[in-house]
Image: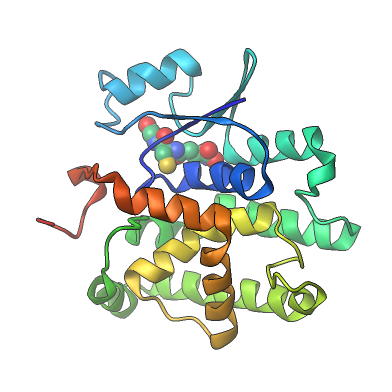
Length: 230
Ligand SMILES: N[C@@H](CCC(=O)N[C@@H](CS)C(=O)NCC(=O)O)C(=O)O
């Protein structure tokens, strides 16, 4: 299988399936298509449109099947590798994990658009301004605390990994880019949620992505609303 991804520093959607594959030891080949721009004539768009008409990353290629959209990729992997328990085994936990991923997929738009993923950057001063001026971001941060805090209270004691549903699942991969945003922008979280974020960052699959992102050195102005120079 091949996974097409964008810049590791910026591409939050790419991070999710990559972390899922790497953390669970499913073999795959990474194909990185660096962002130049998202204009139709850009190298990124021209390259990705040849892979799938949608022209976005991530794309999972399994032989000649191109799967687009992170949730569809995660479901495909869960079906093909049942022994990896990518979703929690318990039906109720699985329903909650799916709810959390679906909410992540379609929600948290204010947080996502005002605090774009930028792993290499350290922007706590921007986080403070955003939290002062953007009530929708404040609401997203509160909702995330509520969601993660609630799951951690219910499940964390069931496994020493201390992740969302006891052992690493699609839900943890789904929230990893959000954790990156909390770190870059110094967003507030409770002690319990902060400890989870730190545990997640230390997991080998997540740590490997972070290390690659920090070493990448491929910066793009259109992904950098807050930095004029580096
Ligand atoms: N819902 C899609 C979102 C994918 C997405 O927005 N990818 C971004 C990179 S993180 C992209 O390819 N942007 C280029 C564009 O929209 O033209 C998914 O879950 O995979």
